[in-house]
Each structure stands twice: as C-alpha cells, then as structure tokens.
Image 1 (tube, rainbow, N blue to C red):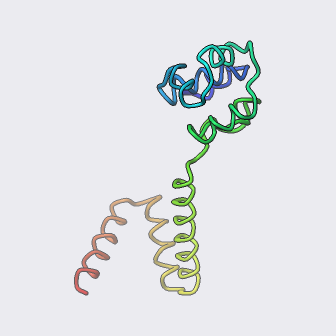
Image 2 (cartoon, rainbow, N blue to C red; image 1 turned 120 degrees about the horizontal axis):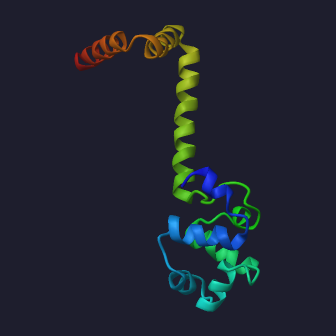
Image 3 (cartoon, helix red, strand yellow; image 1 turned 60 degrees about the vertical axis):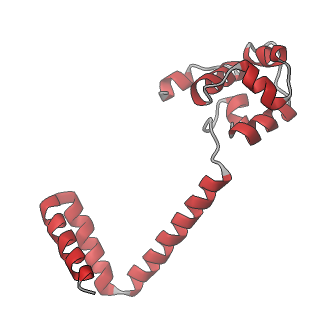
Length: 141
C-alpha cells in the first residue's frame, strides 16, 4: 500500500482496520481469537469507540508484529520485524563488516572492488567480462 494511503489513516482504529485487512488478510474474528478479546471489543477498537489497552496492543505486537507506536500515533512503520529477520540482518551486517575490514587490509583487493563498482555504474559489458574472468580463475583452483 502506498504511503499516501497510509497517511490518510488518522486514527488508531483506521490503522488497525488496514493492518488486519491488508497485511494480515484476517478478519475481526481471527483477531478476537488470537487476542482473547470479544469480536465486539475488536469492532469497538476498529471503530474508535473504545481505546486499545496495553495488553491488547502487546498481544498484537507479539502475535502479528504490529508496531504499537504506529497504531497509536501513526509514527514509524506498521510491521515490526520478527526476531529471525533481525538475526538475519545482524548476520548480514557482520559479514559485510568482515568483508570491509578484509578489503581495507588488502590494497589490491580494495582496488579490484572499487574498479568493479565503477564498472557497474558505467560499463556493464566490461563488468560481465571481469565477472567471467573471475569465474574462470576460480574454476582453475
């Protein structure tokens, strides 16, 4: 959904309704069952006739990665990452960090990588030639 449409949701109920329908593809009954709240209570939250309490918001956070800050204020992103996604991001960052230090410690490697990055911007054909050469060298090992 576009940011423009997200921006038109001015209330917690409107944001909750959008998240249930567009992100979860769920029903009020599904949310009721998952949170232990009655369908009437969930309907009241969605219609802004009842304020969402911390327990309900916490259940939405833990079961559906729903960002409570976004629901209440509209600030931030609707969906928070799952722990596995966070762990994968940390592992990727660690890998990039190690590659960075390895590159900085080896001037020849740094020059090759910088050259490849420059070719990626200006000359894709030459970049493919370099890529194929690297593959051939690696196959000889």
